[in-house]
Length: 357
Image (cartoon, rainbow, N blue to C red; front, top):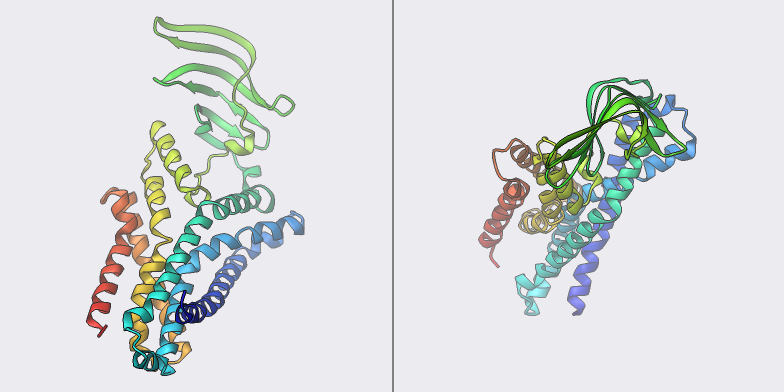
Protein backbone atom coordinates (compact mmCIF):
# COMPACT_ATOMS: atom_id res chain seq x y z
CA UNK A 1 0.00 0.00 0.00
CA UNK A 2 1.44 3.34 -1.06
CA UNK A 3 1.67 6.48 1.09
CA UNK A 4 -0.87 8.15 -1.23
CA UNK A 5 -3.38 5.30 -0.79
CA UNK A 6 -3.07 5.44 3.01
CA UNK A 7 -3.52 9.20 2.88
CA UNK A 8 -6.72 8.96 0.81
CA UNK A 9 -8.09 6.22 3.06
CA UNK A 10 -7.62 8.55 6.02
CA UNK A 11 -9.38 11.40 4.21
CA UNK A 12 -12.31 9.08 3.50
CA UNK A 13 -12.65 7.29 6.84
CA UNK A 14 -12.72 10.38 9.08
CA UNK A 15 -15.84 11.97 7.49
CA UNK A 16 -17.32 8.50 7.04
CA UNK A 17 -17.14 7.81 10.77
CA UNK A 18 -18.53 11.25 11.56
CA UNK A 19 -21.38 10.89 9.06
CA UNK A 20 -22.25 7.36 10.17
CA UNK A 21 -22.50 8.42 13.80
CA UNK A 22 -24.41 11.61 13.03
CA UNK A 23 -26.96 10.12 10.64
CA UNK A 24 -27.53 7.07 12.85
CA UNK A 25 -28.06 9.20 15.96
CA UNK A 26 -30.44 11.58 14.16
CA UNK A 27 -32.64 8.78 12.82
CA UNK A 28 -32.43 6.86 16.12
CA UNK A 29 -33.55 9.94 18.07
CA UNK A 30 -36.38 10.56 15.61
CA UNK A 31 -37.60 6.99 16.04
CA UNK A 32 -37.29 7.25 19.83
CA UNK A 33 -39.28 10.48 20.00
CA UNK A 34 -41.93 8.89 17.78
CA UNK A 35 -42.28 6.10 20.38
CA UNK A 36 -42.14 8.43 23.39
CA UNK A 37 -45.87 8.27 24.18
CA UNK A 38 -46.00 4.43 24.51
CA UNK A 39 -42.68 4.51 26.38
CA UNK A 40 -43.97 7.00 28.95
CA UNK A 41 -47.08 4.84 29.55
CA UNK A 42 -45.13 1.59 29.70
CA UNK A 43 -44.79 -0.42 32.92
CA UNK A 44 -41.57 -2.05 31.74
CA UNK A 45 -38.37 -1.47 33.77
CA UNK A 46 -36.11 1.31 32.59
CA UNK A 47 -33.36 -1.21 31.81
CA UNK A 48 -35.72 -3.10 29.46
CA UNK A 49 -36.70 0.11 27.67
CA UNK A 50 -33.06 1.14 27.27
CA UNK A 51 -32.14 -2.34 26.02
CA UNK A 52 -34.98 -2.22 23.49
CA UNK A 53 -33.82 1.16 22.18
CA UNK A 54 -30.12 0.32 22.23
CA UNK A 55 -30.59 -2.89 20.25
CA UNK A 56 -32.09 -0.80 17.46
CA UNK A 57 -28.81 1.08 16.91
CA UNK A 58 -27.23 -1.57 14.60
CA UNK A 59 -30.33 -1.48 12.40
CA UNK A 60 -30.26 2.29 11.98
CA UNK A 61 -26.46 2.27 11.51
CA UNK A 62 -26.71 -0.19 8.60
CA UNK A 63 -29.58 1.81 7.09
CA UNK A 64 -27.59 5.07 6.99
CA UNK A 65 -24.25 3.69 5.79
CA UNK A 66 -24.94 4.81 2.16
CA UNK A 67 -25.51 8.38 3.40
CA UNK A 68 -22.26 8.30 5.34
CA UNK A 69 -20.41 6.85 2.33
CA UNK A 70 -21.68 9.63 0.05
CA UNK A 71 -20.81 12.32 2.59
CA UNK A 72 -17.30 10.88 3.01
CA UNK A 73 -16.83 10.79 -0.78
CA UNK A 74 -17.95 14.39 -1.23
CA UNK A 75 -15.79 15.65 1.63
CA UNK A 76 -12.69 13.60 0.77
CA UNK A 77 -12.69 14.22 -2.98
CA UNK A 78 -13.96 17.80 -2.75
CA UNK A 79 -11.43 18.69 -0.07
CA UNK A 80 -8.58 17.06 -1.98
CA UNK A 81 -9.40 19.07 -5.09
CA UNK A 82 -10.23 22.31 -3.27
CA UNK A 83 -6.96 22.33 -1.35
CA UNK A 84 -4.93 22.06 -4.53
CA UNK A 85 -3.60 18.61 -3.65
CA UNK A 86 -5.17 17.21 -6.81
CA UNK A 87 -3.11 19.55 -9.00
CA UNK A 88 -0.01 18.76 -6.98
CA UNK A 89 -0.57 15.03 -7.41
CA UNK A 90 -1.05 15.46 -11.14
CA UNK A 91 2.19 17.44 -11.31
CA UNK A 92 3.87 14.46 -9.66
CA UNK A 93 2.55 12.18 -12.39
CA UNK A 94 -0.35 10.60 -10.49
CA UNK A 95 -3.20 9.91 -12.89
CA UNK A 96 -6.74 10.94 -12.05
CA UNK A 97 -7.84 7.31 -11.96
CA UNK A 98 -5.26 6.61 -9.31
CA UNK A 99 -6.59 9.59 -7.39
CA UNK A 100 -10.10 8.17 -6.91
CA UNK A 101 -9.39 4.42 -6.85
CA UNK A 102 -8.56 4.39 -3.09
CA UNK A 103 -11.92 6.05 -2.38
CA UNK A 104 -13.73 3.38 -4.39
CA UNK A 105 -11.71 0.74 -2.55
CA UNK A 106 -12.88 2.15 0.78
CA UNK A 107 -16.50 2.07 -0.34
CA UNK A 108 -16.09 -1.55 -1.47
CA UNK A 109 -14.67 -2.48 1.95
CA UNK A 110 -17.59 -0.68 3.60
CA UNK A 111 -20.00 -2.67 1.38
CA UNK A 112 -18.48 -5.96 2.46
CA UNK A 113 -18.58 -5.00 6.14
CA UNK A 114 -22.17 -3.77 5.80
CA UNK A 115 -23.16 -7.09 4.24
CA UNK A 116 -21.46 -8.98 7.06
CA UNK A 117 -23.22 -6.87 9.71
CA UNK A 118 -26.52 -7.31 7.91
CA UNK A 119 -26.14 -11.09 8.01
CA UNK A 120 -24.93 -11.37 11.62
CA UNK A 121 -25.41 -8.60 14.17
CA UNK A 122 -28.28 -6.57 12.74
CA UNK A 123 -31.03 -9.23 12.34
CA UNK A 124 -30.46 -10.70 15.80
CA UNK A 125 -30.34 -7.30 17.50
CA UNK A 126 -33.37 -5.97 15.61
CA UNK A 127 -35.42 -9.13 16.29
CA UNK A 128 -34.60 -8.89 20.00
CA UNK A 129 -35.47 -5.16 20.02
CA UNK A 130 -38.85 -5.76 18.33
CA UNK A 131 -39.62 -8.67 20.65
CA UNK A 132 -38.94 -6.55 23.75
CA UNK A 133 -41.13 -3.79 22.32
CA UNK A 134 -44.04 -6.13 21.59
CA UNK A 135 -43.84 -8.17 24.78
CA UNK A 136 -42.53 -5.81 27.47
CA UNK A 137 -42.59 -2.15 26.50
CA UNK A 138 -45.80 -1.95 24.46
CA UNK A 139 -47.60 -5.31 24.83
CA UNK A 140 -50.79 -4.74 22.80
CA UNK A 141 -51.33 -8.51 22.62
CA UNK A 142 -52.57 -8.57 26.23
CA UNK A 143 -55.84 -6.90 25.26
CA UNK A 144 -56.41 -8.47 21.88
CA UNK A 145 -58.72 -11.30 20.84
CA UNK A 146 -58.02 -12.81 17.44
CA UNK A 147 -61.00 -14.16 15.51
CA UNK A 148 -60.84 -16.83 12.77
CA UNK A 149 -57.06 -16.92 12.63
CA UNK A 150 -54.54 -19.08 10.83
CA UNK A 151 -51.28 -19.44 12.74
CA UNK A 152 -47.84 -20.89 12.10
CA UNK A 153 -46.83 -23.00 15.07
CA UNK A 154 -43.55 -24.38 13.75
CA UNK A 155 -41.77 -25.36 10.53
CA UNK A 156 -44.38 -28.07 9.80
CA UNK A 157 -47.27 -27.01 12.05
CA UNK A 158 -50.31 -25.04 10.93
CA UNK A 159 -53.07 -23.98 13.36
CA UNK A 160 -56.55 -22.65 12.66
CA UNK A 161 -58.82 -21.38 15.43
CA UNK A 162 -62.20 -19.69 15.74
CA UNK A 163 -60.80 -17.50 18.54
CA UNK A 164 -57.35 -17.04 20.06
CA UNK A 165 -56.82 -15.38 23.45
CA UNK A 166 -53.06 -14.97 24.01
CA UNK A 167 -53.33 -13.62 27.56
CA UNK A 168 -55.38 -16.66 28.66
CA UNK A 169 -53.38 -19.12 26.58
CA UNK A 170 -56.58 -20.40 24.98
CA UNK A 171 -57.65 -21.57 21.52
CA UNK A 172 -61.33 -22.10 20.73
CA UNK A 173 -62.21 -24.67 18.07
CA UNK A 174 -58.57 -25.28 17.12
CA UNK A 175 -57.39 -27.47 14.25
CA UNK A 176 -53.70 -28.42 14.29
CA UNK A 177 -52.22 -29.83 11.09
CA UNK A 178 -48.85 -31.57 11.08
CA UNK A 179 -47.35 -31.33 7.61
CA UNK A 180 -45.30 -34.04 5.89
CA UNK A 181 -43.39 -34.29 2.66
CA UNK A 182 -46.53 -34.80 0.56
CA UNK A 183 -49.11 -32.85 2.58
CA UNK A 184 -50.96 -33.17 5.88
CA UNK A 185 -49.83 -36.25 7.84
CA UNK A 186 -51.86 -35.74 11.02
CA UNK A 187 -54.61 -33.48 12.27
CA UNK A 188 -55.97 -32.63 15.72
CA UNK A 189 -59.50 -31.22 15.65
CA UNK A 190 -60.82 -30.15 19.08
CA UNK A 191 -63.24 -27.89 20.92
CA UNK A 192 -60.61 -26.19 23.08
CA UNK A 193 -56.87 -26.05 23.62
CA UNK A 194 -54.96 -24.56 26.56
CA UNK A 195 -51.29 -23.74 26.98
CA UNK A 196 -49.61 -25.87 29.67
CA UNK A 197 -46.55 -23.99 30.85
CA UNK A 198 -45.16 -26.92 32.84
CA UNK A 199 -45.28 -29.29 29.89
CA UNK A 200 -44.38 -26.59 27.39
CA UNK A 201 -47.15 -27.89 25.10
CA UNK A 202 -50.69 -27.08 24.03
CA UNK A 203 -53.23 -29.52 25.47
CA UNK A 204 -56.25 -30.25 23.25
CA UNK A 205 -59.64 -31.19 24.74
CA UNK A 206 -62.67 -33.04 23.35
CA UNK A 207 -61.69 -33.76 19.81
CA UNK A 208 -60.52 -36.27 17.26
CA UNK A 209 -57.12 -37.17 15.86
CA UNK A 210 -56.94 -37.91 12.15
CA UNK A 211 -54.04 -39.73 10.50
CA UNK A 212 -53.80 -39.56 6.72
CA UNK A 213 -52.32 -42.70 5.22
CA UNK A 214 -52.19 -44.23 1.78
CA UNK A 215 -55.19 -46.40 2.71
CA UNK A 216 -57.35 -43.47 3.83
CA UNK A 217 -58.07 -41.53 7.02
CA UNK A 218 -57.88 -43.10 10.48
CA UNK A 219 -59.82 -41.20 13.19
CA UNK A 220 -59.25 -41.61 16.92
CA UNK A 221 -61.46 -39.64 19.38
CA UNK A 222 -59.86 -38.24 22.54
CA UNK A 223 -60.90 -36.40 25.68
CA UNK A 224 -57.49 -34.85 26.39
CA UNK A 225 -54.23 -35.10 24.46
CA UNK A 226 -50.90 -33.31 24.69
CA UNK A 227 -50.07 -32.06 21.22
CA UNK A 228 -46.72 -31.55 19.50
CA UNK A 229 -47.39 -27.81 19.36
CA UNK A 230 -44.79 -26.22 21.65
CA UNK A 231 -45.02 -22.57 20.57
CA UNK A 232 -46.00 -20.37 23.57
CA UNK A 233 -49.02 -18.06 23.18
CA UNK A 234 -46.80 -15.05 22.50
CA UNK A 235 -45.08 -16.87 19.63
CA UNK A 236 -48.45 -17.70 18.10
CA UNK A 237 -49.67 -14.10 18.06
CA UNK A 238 -50.39 -13.46 14.36
CA UNK A 239 -47.86 -10.91 13.23
CA UNK A 240 -45.87 -10.76 10.06
CA UNK A 241 -42.19 -11.54 10.49
CA UNK A 242 -40.21 -8.52 9.33
CA UNK A 243 -37.56 -9.29 6.69
CA UNK A 244 -35.22 -7.06 8.70
CA UNK A 245 -35.26 -9.70 11.47
CA UNK A 246 -33.96 -12.36 9.06
CA UNK A 247 -30.70 -13.07 7.28
CA UNK A 248 -30.72 -13.62 3.53
CA UNK A 249 -30.83 -17.40 3.95
CA UNK A 250 -33.60 -17.16 6.54
CA UNK A 251 -35.62 -14.83 4.30
CA UNK A 252 -35.43 -17.32 1.42
CA UNK A 253 -36.42 -20.19 3.71
CA UNK A 254 -39.28 -18.15 5.14
CA UNK A 255 -40.51 -17.26 1.64
CA UNK A 256 -40.73 -20.97 0.80
CA UNK A 257 -42.54 -21.60 4.07
CA UNK A 258 -45.08 -18.83 3.37
CA UNK A 259 -45.65 -20.15 -0.14
CA UNK A 260 -46.15 -23.64 1.21
CA UNK A 261 -49.01 -22.45 3.41
CA UNK A 262 -50.71 -20.57 0.60
CA UNK A 263 -49.33 -17.05 1.15
CA UNK A 264 -47.42 -14.84 -1.24
CA UNK A 265 -43.65 -15.27 -0.86
CA UNK A 266 -42.76 -12.25 -2.99
CA UNK A 267 -42.07 -9.84 -0.11
CA UNK A 268 -39.47 -12.17 1.37
CA UNK A 269 -37.96 -13.11 -2.00
CA UNK A 270 -37.50 -9.41 -2.79
CA UNK A 271 -36.06 -8.81 0.70
CA UNK A 272 -33.57 -11.67 0.25
CA UNK A 273 -32.33 -10.21 -3.03
CA UNK A 274 -32.19 -6.72 -1.49
CA UNK A 275 -29.94 -8.00 1.29
CA UNK A 276 -27.25 -8.41 -1.36
CA UNK A 277 -28.07 -5.28 -3.34
CA UNK A 278 -28.38 -2.82 -0.45
CA UNK A 279 -24.84 -3.12 0.98
CA UNK A 280 -23.33 -2.58 -2.47
CA UNK A 281 -25.32 0.61 -2.74
CA UNK A 282 -22.27 2.09 -1.00
CA UNK A 283 -20.04 1.31 -3.97
CA UNK A 284 -22.54 2.73 -6.48
CA UNK A 285 -23.21 5.87 -4.49
CA UNK A 286 -19.47 6.45 -4.02
CA UNK A 287 -18.91 6.19 -7.78
CA UNK A 288 -21.74 8.67 -8.26
CA UNK A 289 -20.36 10.99 -5.61
CA UNK A 290 -16.90 11.31 -7.21
CA UNK A 291 -17.95 13.38 -10.29
CA UNK A 292 -20.43 15.32 -8.15
CA UNK A 293 -17.64 16.19 -5.71
CA UNK A 294 -15.46 17.35 -8.60
CA UNK A 295 -18.20 19.76 -9.61
CA UNK A 296 -18.84 20.90 -6.01
CA UNK A 297 -15.15 21.39 -5.28
CA UNK A 298 -15.62 25.10 -4.51
CA UNK A 299 -18.56 24.47 -2.20
CA UNK A 300 -18.51 24.30 1.59
CA UNK A 301 -18.94 21.17 3.66
CA UNK A 302 -22.46 22.28 4.52
CA UNK A 303 -23.35 22.08 0.83
CA UNK A 304 -21.73 18.63 0.68
CA UNK A 305 -23.78 17.53 3.70
CA UNK A 306 -27.04 18.73 2.13
CA UNK A 307 -26.14 17.13 -1.20
CA UNK A 308 -25.42 13.84 0.54
CA UNK A 309 -28.80 13.95 2.28
CA UNK A 310 -30.74 14.85 -0.86
CA UNK A 311 -29.09 12.29 -3.13
CA UNK A 312 -29.33 9.55 -0.50
CA UNK A 313 -33.06 10.08 -0.07
CA UNK A 314 -33.58 10.00 -3.83
CA UNK A 315 -31.63 6.73 -3.95
CA UNK A 316 -33.67 5.23 -1.10
CA UNK A 317 -36.86 6.40 -2.80
CA UNK A 318 -35.84 4.58 -5.98
CA UNK A 319 -35.06 1.44 -3.97
CA UNK A 320 -38.53 1.59 -2.41
CA UNK A 321 -40.10 1.90 -5.86
CA UNK A 322 -38.17 -1.18 -6.96
CA UNK A 323 -39.26 -3.09 -3.84
CA UNK A 324 -42.91 -2.17 -4.45
CA UNK A 325 -42.71 -3.33 -8.08
CA UNK A 326 -41.17 -6.62 -6.94
CA UNK A 327 -43.70 -7.29 -4.18
CA UNK A 328 -46.59 -6.53 -6.53
CA UNK A 329 -45.19 -9.02 -9.07
CA UNK A 330 -44.63 -6.51 -11.86
CA UNK A 331 -40.92 -7.31 -12.06
CA UNK A 332 -38.86 -10.32 -10.83
CA UNK A 333 -37.39 -10.06 -7.29
CA UNK A 334 -33.80 -9.89 -8.58
CA UNK A 335 -34.64 -7.00 -10.93
CA UNK A 336 -36.56 -5.09 -8.27
CA UNK A 337 -33.70 -5.38 -5.76
CA UNK A 338 -31.05 -4.13 -8.19
CA UNK A 339 -33.17 -1.55 -10.05
CA UNK A 340 -31.88 1.49 -8.14
CA UNK A 341 -28.28 0.27 -8.18
CA UNK A 342 -28.44 -0.32 -11.93
CA UNK A 343 -29.96 3.08 -12.66
CA UNK A 344 -27.62 5.10 -10.46
CA UNK A 345 -24.67 2.95 -11.49
CA UNK A 346 -25.31 3.79 -15.14
CA UNK A 347 -25.58 7.48 -14.23
CA UNK A 348 -22.29 7.32 -12.32
CA UNK A 349 -20.57 5.61 -15.28
CA UNK A 350 -21.79 8.33 -17.68
CA UNK A 351 -20.70 11.17 -15.38
CA UNK A 352 -17.27 9.67 -14.77
CA UNK A 353 -16.75 9.04 -18.51
CA UNK A 354 -17.67 12.64 -19.30
CA UNK A 355 -15.10 13.88 -16.81
CA UNK A 356 -11.61 14.39 -18.15
CA UNK A 357 -9.91 11.32 -16.64
